[in-house]
Length: 538
Image 1: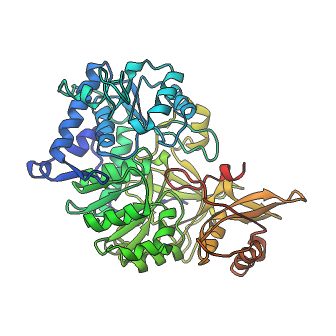
Image 2: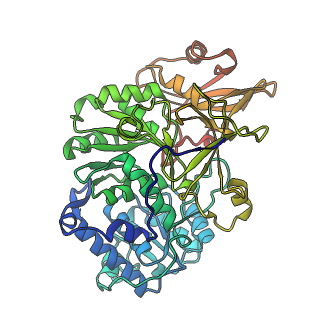
Image 3: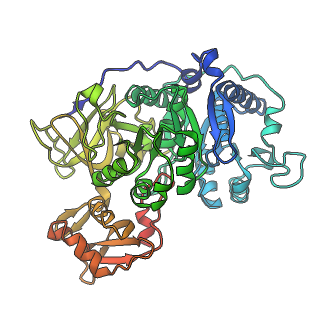
């Protein structure tokens, strides 16, 4: 049985991303600050940003880049990233955003698979960018180093065009024609945690739809100051931070990477009102003593996504910071948000507050359902309490067009009726609230019982001497799959395997208890905060 969004339908205009974000901007809004580069303190107004986007698009068009072309963008968060990304889209090209942690071989693989004809990067990533571009067969003139020495300069990036080379001509933005419903705006690649990375084809309509779906529920306003540390190259940062904040005419305080001291300092200095995070940051906010050294009173809401946030951890953050903590759910294939808790918890829209253990309700103009992965039967929404567990399926205007050059994978993920099969196990309650249980493919099967790693990780993180943790299934000497915990101990803590095992056993059913423990220095995670379980299995 499917369940539709309880939120009012929203208008999704037939427009490009650029038109949707900036066509209706007023003179007063143009003179407000859009972007602040936290490292340098440099401010960019909306007027300056839109002008640079137009010039960037014109420069790309002058180089023959337009509709049908793919441009790689390899850079950490910055105002230059925002201008480059939207400049690519404004020119009618497609942006394939590349993980800033990628090796040269990873970069080359994505450039080749996406058939990119240009790569835009920055000097800190130049070595791997240059090698990756070369491996992909791109000529030197097709590697743009935004902050480099320039085509005729000397030093880092010399011989490659830089931002000044592109923008110096002040070429007008081109007139481009394409159908927003089918033309690709972005081509991010899935994380690859459950297989080889695949190009996720997101149209202009997909991205416009998702901003339209979440904006009324976020309630973001022009006077909001949003801390942007989640990477813009990831769909979470691209849509929920960059595009949604720009549409709201809010101010973005941009961090190129996460550092807890700088994160806290920026909130205090810029009086940030909203922070988007992933659960690993929540662990630090709940436990690190550095938090008490900063004035974080300006924060109104912290929103977590990209991985499940344990309710106890969320409550600990809310209590310590004195602000609202909510979480949502999504995936690259959904542009990304499919389920959301409004910033007020749901009081205005739903006349009640969603529990922190929930990822919220289905977004506007969309529907969800749960399907038993064993039988294929649809699971009924209960009259009260929680439903049975099933795979979460979703249908809406934010569902991707498919995987690039991979029809088989597309058909495995999106069925003939348009339902996208998320691969995540969930439950739904009588109010339509969705609760994520775990990844279908990450469940540990112990003696026939299903053990969700996320549940054990939440228990481990509640231990005061554990700074971080991850759980995977491994084979024991008898060939049985058992839960193994990887634990990062708090600095100065003395913790043994036996103590960890005993602690978890006191909180879970006997079949769920951790049976092996390994202490490590750090849990490997993707840039969006997802645990890289494949790295732990090596």
